[in-house]
Image (cartoon, rainbow, N blue to C red):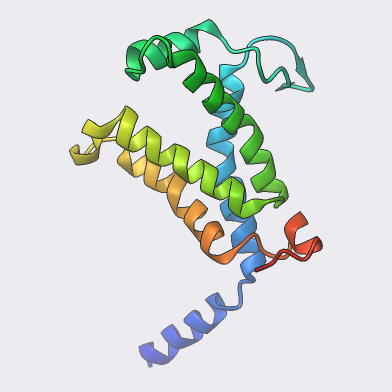
Length: 160
């Protein structure tokens, strides 16, 4: 009896359209990067969105140098690249435009954060690796399966 109930439950779950799963994955992955990117920018905003992509806060450059261990000459470049990636890739991901490129870019950023910035946290049971896995998992779904039908890529015929 319970096997049949589980089978029906499983069949019901399989009816959830991938389009909804993909949209949820795209939004879930985009939000933390977008918030981080917006926090790196100085200056004006339009409707609460900072739009001056090259106006980096000095405190963020300092963070890259002092906390993350980037050399002094590279810290400003690394901080600017991170800010650009965090402000440009999440909207692409949410809109579903060049979705796999955006997902790959954010997955690479996640790997850099985990393996370069916080390598010691990987073996720590209470480390931030679990949070990075929460970012990586939906990105891997989108990278592997695509953006789903609710995307600009699908409208443009880039489903596969």
